[in-house]
Amino acid sequence: MVSASPIIPRELRLVLTNKCNFACYFCFNEGYPKEFRSVDLAVVDYLMIVRQMVSEYGLKKVRISGGEPLVSPILPSLLRELRTTWPELDVGFTTNASLPHILKEILLDTDLGDVKINASVHSVDKARLQAICRTENVGGVLYSLQSLAESAAGRVKFNCVYTGGPRGDEDAMTVLALAEEFNVTVKLLCLNVNPYNQEDVLSGLAIKDVPAKPGTDAIYALARSLGYQAIPGRQNEMRKGDHCIEVVDCSISDPIAYYNNFRTIRIYFNSRVAVTGEFDGFCRSFSRLSPITAIRGLVADISAQFTRTAEQEP
Ligand code: SF4
Image 1 (tube, helix red, strand yellow):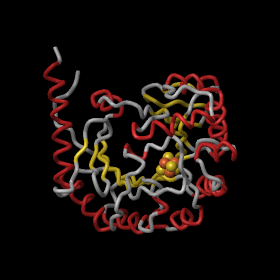
Image 2: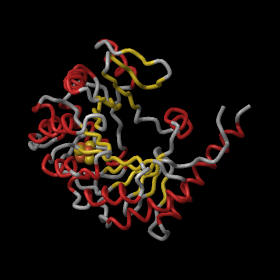
Image 3: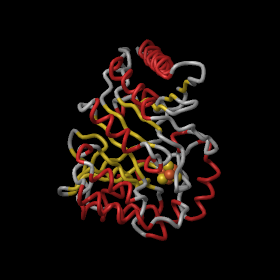
Image 4: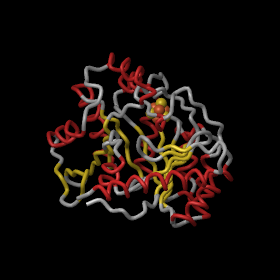
């Protein structure tokens, strides 16, 4: 049964920059063309959006992504402003963990002691990481992961894009073994394909022997083979002893299926085109609108889609 009640966006993704020091062949770049280059905004611009969404929708969660947010000079100050202005907000960011000196500055800041950190790591094997991320500069990643596990335990998760096939299995197993040793939860994400990035993904296949889009079934099978078991009442999560993993199907593009699966609507805020929903088909430009007006329009579009679907229910 699909609810016709209005959809309330509780989670906001701030896409801080499109710049990144890696070039992962599967980079989703939050759905944008790889040529897309944002004009980076100032802290006050992001705070204005958060303020409006807190007052209008009761925003609960802010996640900062990119590109690589650590290459943006405003990340530490934006985090500090968010923590001090809205201590009740759940705040975090996703990073490729390649810049340990900047990460350390954030980790050592006691005002940021409850900021969540998702560190993306797709293999613990250096050569594989270089091939996946298409950079020689992966030296800092393992160092960062160790620091994160030691000084930020409990608020760190590892994000691992599962690329499928024997090599994908091997890569995921190396990450799971490290995470188990550190007792850090791993989010295993299905390889998703940004339609603007198809060529990269196809050329990336040359470094692996896998189907372009392995599904969650392959992840669950791998996890079961390693001794992980489903957790009753916890969809998409598995456990082995004390160690937990989450399985995330990033490829769901149908809004109803997405909502039913994740029970959330995310709004992405970027600096040029960009207010988008979590899934295909919902995007608002605010070049001629204020960002909050674009967000309202997007939320209305999504709500209308749900209402139409509910009316079609027998
Ligand atoms: S680290 Fe993230 S943003 Fe950078 S190229 Fe890889 S997937 Fe894209």
